[in-house]
Length: 393
Image 1 (cartoon, rainbow, N blue to C red):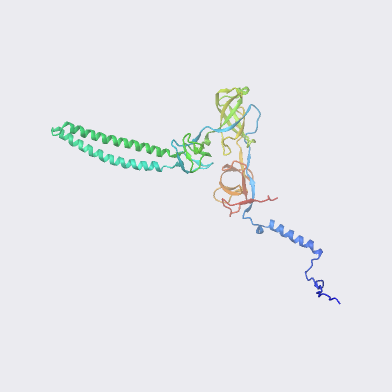
Image 2 (image 1 turned 30 degrees about the vertical axis):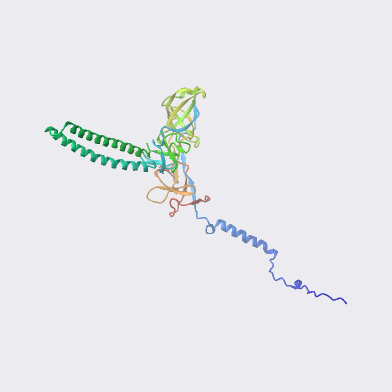
């Protein structure tokens, strides 16, 4: 008789499942709660993680000015009449650079310095040698004076007097030589500092601290200048005028200048110079025209279009810059908050007469097109990070 193996009974099927079950009718409610929570997190400020202050904005208006006209026209570029590549007459390693692109400097400001420790050491050495040489010069002068007194009483030989004179002349010559060497070192020391030759704006930084700067040559790792300086007061227009329109080109001829970046308004100008030769390859003549009115939108190398006009057309109504009164900061001095790259800049203004109930004319501080904060909160300050909110209906 065979044995039946021991086999434990499977009781898993008898286990009671106590996991709570969700009724299918409740799923829409759950999805609605999740969606509502997400919308609240996105829209309610206290649930947002950003620290940016939400502000309402408005653009500054610009009205009037010269309008586009037809007539003899040409294209050109804004160029500076006064431009300088700032450098030194001596080679050296740059140890100080005080400007960046866009820096404004005044005439005589220190732009950069070269390593001058070796020159300063030479200056101190020469000063010490000059002090010693002057002491010897004094001794030889006194000795010469004694010999000259003795010579009057014939108590000294002619050779002794000549020797004293030679010693004094040699000592004096050495002092002069050392002083000339000191002057040379001082001149080189002065040349190790780069000064601004005129007031202007740095448009290009050509070197960094640690680089070798030379006047010319110097190898592939050397720089010829540290920065490029432009006098913005001398910005003018370089024009290539077709030879067929040359009759319009005369010194003093009025014209209107339209920036390619802002083609809706023109600047009054006049021809300053006509080049005394033409370009055979281009069949053009170069002109230079000066601006009779300027603002901060004029930049070197901007493209322009010029239109030659009559004397009557060259005097358009001056443009008006209009600011919503609601953008003014409450305070003693007129000012607004300009929004630039998400940050606030406080801009002081001068104001003129009211244009209407909601707009006021700006005398200076704005040129039109800026984005400013509307109804600024008293707690706002320059440098705050803000976010532009949706305009209210």
